Length: 163
Image 1 (tube, rainbow, N blue to C red):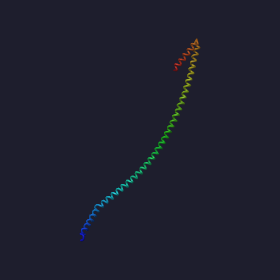
Image 2: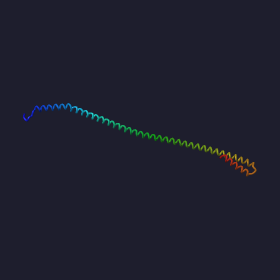
Image 3: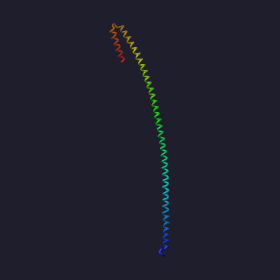
């Protein structure tokens, strides 16, 4: 053997190396590769589901924003309707109050006119009674001074009775 090379030893080492490489391949490489593939698939599935969840969330967000915009416009319309209804009610109440005030003023004027006529009519009767009384006293009295004093006393008594 030249250079001290033993081919048998080399072949045995090569056989040992092949057995070791095959054993390691079967015991370590395949399970690790399978585990890594499984983990990679799991992460891909998580990414897909998270993207889908994100897309769903974005769609729901857009839907809710659209609904909020609709609700805002609906609220604005309701406010306008309520303002119009309030204005109508206020104008109706104001109209009723004005008509009631006019009726009260007209009634007060009518009553004042009736009271005026009643007072004037009563004063006329009182004056007639006083004049009748005075003329009867003047006719019956001896002097004009006594009649004048009687007239004044009667007028004072009537004035005190009415107060």
